[in-house]
Image (cartoon, rainbow, N blue to C red):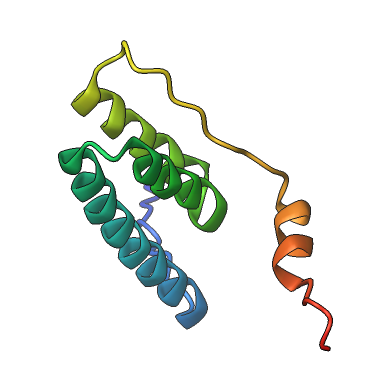
Length: 100
């Protein structure tokens, strides 16, 4: 008796597909913005795009953007990015200023 196995295909849920699509679009927008900022020599703006990659994307996106910046500018430039725990970011974005 010979047992054969067939590869199982994993299907993504609509929510997973939407998340993948969102992250792809976010990566494209942040990469384009980073490239424009680096081309203009605006390192403050470049750091802002890198921080957004970490905060709104995922650690890999932030790292990819940071590596891209280092490739363009070179390793001699010191890059400072801000990394905060997710719960800190959620609190910061959900706080509303008081209404006068």
